[in-house]
Length: 188
Length: 169
Image (cartoon, rainbow over all chains, first blue to last red; front, side, top):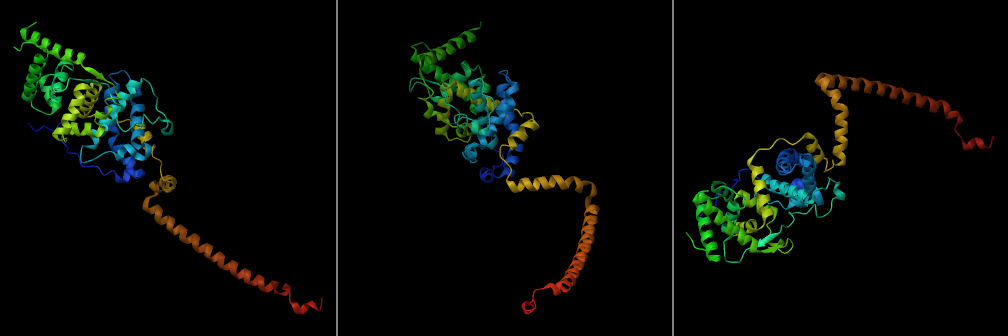
């Protein structure tokens, strides 16, 4: 199988968060100064199109509350060997924004008043569909989802998957052959 | 509509039909298969091995909100965002309180820095000289006090109780 092209190559220097998670105030201030832009941008991108621009600051603050809550429990889960800190923070901030939109309210509260669920380490589970086993590979199903439900162009889907467009076309074709057979349709 | 468009529509219909006929897994039921934030970040950075990547893609293909999350995160990473408002940075920084010693140092700095900035080094030298003069003056007055105390003790010596005088009383 072709080696995937990194979506966002890891070039950022690995962050040492040991002093920060030990409660070093100066390290926390430095962290906030450095990554507030990343968090703010991710929250803004999700909330502004939903017509909730006025809530961006509060949700971004909620992200920081999550990060330092329970003695930096969430930050302790970050593994610099697996992904860039900015990528991980973007996922956390985007997930927090989606949760916020799902709740449709939830003003920013003091740390002690924040329910445990809001401080959850990972996003809340999402509802899923179960495709018949052995019908499509995960990538085939994802390619069909990207092309037919998200209306992405082949080039965009390829970029999203970190592969070249020809791989997407080939995966798409194989998936359709299987689908047609599954529904007893003739392949043309 | 061209033949190619019609074919694309038919193909899309196959995928929609499969999705509609597929069983829905509730959030709780499928929660154990959900990748955590670290795995999603690793997927975006392209650092997952093949098996882990397939696991994430299997979830993305069947969890629409999960795919929303990944696409939104990807878009946010692709575009440099505007700087965060200063008020947000201050509020976020304040979530972790200053240790007491640092608070005191900050207060002292707040008191003395406004004095230091206009005066600079010349002010510091003047301050040291002033401290020396004041110290010298205090030292001198302290010497005088000591001398005065000795004289007072001598003067008061006649009033010290002597047991030998008891008989006289």
